[in-house]
Image (cartoon, rainbow, N blue to C red; front, side, top):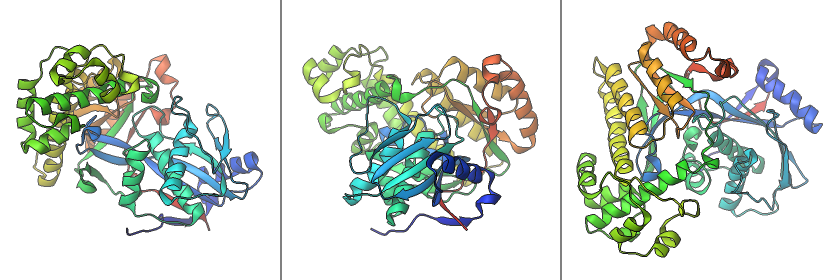
Length: 450
């Protein structure tokens, strides 16, 4: 496996206000100075929602907002983690006996995921410790992958302390399924382009975005922590059950099927044909666990112990047709979006916008992962000049992403801000976390003090 070290850059910390502040806080916290800093950007998913875990491609883009960690290797074999945000408590553990409490969505678990992933991949023991201070300006629980950026930073910090390297694509493969996130593509240097991320096989392809438009992120100010709710887990299971029922309907070995993409691949048909098959095979009324069992020819006990996850065993209804139709139609929209960017017709911006509008409608109506605030914000963005606007990230809160003609950007930002953010609760959200046009996000980096 080809390896390469993390991209490094020597900087004068005194010339970078954020790094300088991080250095000063680190010294006051630990009584010493950091040896290096690691950085990973957040991301906005332009199109392709809730289809990655079904095996289909997504189209994200790195953004300017990021996670930074100041790091000092220590010889005590202890991990000491702190955060500049006072809402996140300090945490300390043995570097050689890290335990991740999966029952609690604690911030430091994401760091431990990156650290433990590197440790287990290389089969390491007797690891050195680290003092780490985390600073992030990605709005939390916003669908912009703040947790993924933290996992990525932790992996980079661990590799750097150990003096080890890992190929970018292999780091992506290693950390995605085994840890928390599928979005560690930040290891790639990104320009003003998106990345088509494919999972079968895993690869990343540049998609050049239209230069005459910008993408604007707007925060609904509704936080949704998918690790602390059941919405996300239920949707994942509904997609799995839909895949099994579709496979059974078409005479496939359904018990080996986990993802909707596998059904399409085994049948060798198009996404459009899969939509027709879904309409024939699955009814729109919700399925009870008992009906799922009858369709598959298994007992309720087998369903609960062999298919359902522990946190979905008590779910009473599953909307299988709607979830499958969203996945297959959204997967098709991702490919259409990529094709449109490649062909670059004169009316590309409104055409891309229409695909984003269709995506939001599907997320809202078929996948039911929107919320009133997101729908309102999408409507406001379209009203003030966005040809397309949609929720981004898991949904149930978080952000929208809109495509906006560059010449309309100033008026768009002013009008959307006035229309949505003047309410008292929303005005309390920091200005920089409300509404912003994306800039090139760059890649993951290690900063060394010059």
